[in-house]
Amino acid sequence: MSLEAIAQAQLDAYNAQDLDAHCAHFADDVVVATLNGEVARSGIEAYRAFYAKTFADFPGNQAKLLNRIVVGANVIDHEHVDRGNGEPPFQVAAIYTFKGGKIARVDFAR
Image (cartoon, rainbow, N blue to C red; front, side):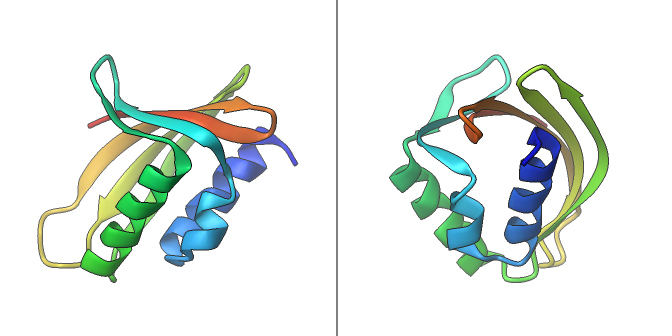
């Protein structure tokens, strides 16, 4: 499976709020951070807990892909996110770094 296909599969699972399918694309030691900032989550259990809560809190949440760039072992997605709760949508850049066919790190710019 190409890196682009993995990035799309995890985004599709995210939009379907399928926690197991979404988390299956991430390494056990995944790290999530803000771009050039602090680590927000480390490890798949912390990642899973965060998105279980996100999916519960925002059942109408959807991320629409605006652009995708693949460079080396990285996939950069520009997304339009609508929580579906009446709050203004926002845009985010998600920089996925891959290792061994899984997403090992995500850096978010917002």
